[in-house]
Length: 294
Image (cartoon, rainbow, N blue to C red; front, side, top):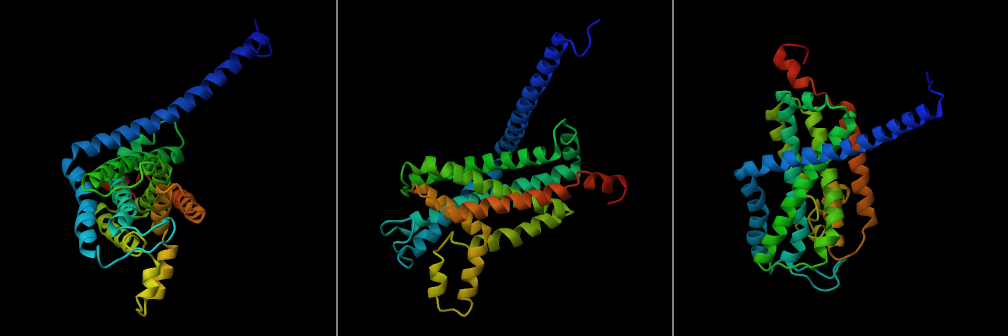
């Protein structure tokens, strides 16, 4: 009988190991595709969510931009090489708000899935927990990017134009920003114990991140305002991770690279995702309903 030292047996063993690695890689891609497809199907079946996701930035674009078109003039600041219409300036910020709201909504669905025990079933898959959570974040990022490009189509309809190259240049910037915002939402879903509390917590996270940023106005206008708190708001906006998501997208739209914003986005994404992975407990909602330790 041939032993494990036999050349034929050794070749079979190596082949099985190689095949196992290939299957593992295939399963990794399958996990992202399956979770991404699930998120997209859930989103398309909830028409109210689809409409609200697009109405919000469109209202900002039409109402806010129209009201402040002649009030806020955008000077020649990077990445712009000429004077820019306020509506055009707003587009990267509104793309950021689309990403922010959608990733937070996906985090809310993760709280719901945890409460219903769906995450317990998902994490029984023969994949590392961190990878399954990462796949959820990537799935949320793909869905938010799909909405962002739909918003860009609406911008074209209303005559707000970006360079045609921007549609391609913004893709990696959007993905990096969406993953970072998804990691923030994932961390919130880990440490917020009840679904009702999470909805309130979202408001305390989304609106400060959005308004204290460069999404609606250049940061230098905070210093020029002359208000006593203008300087403080300026520095808060500079350390706001959402500001760097918006600026990363803004620079990418014009084919320019913002290394500081990219470093901040990647660093925050890594730290928040690590904290969320360490603290994630899929049994929390299930144990509370079962009467076990909460």
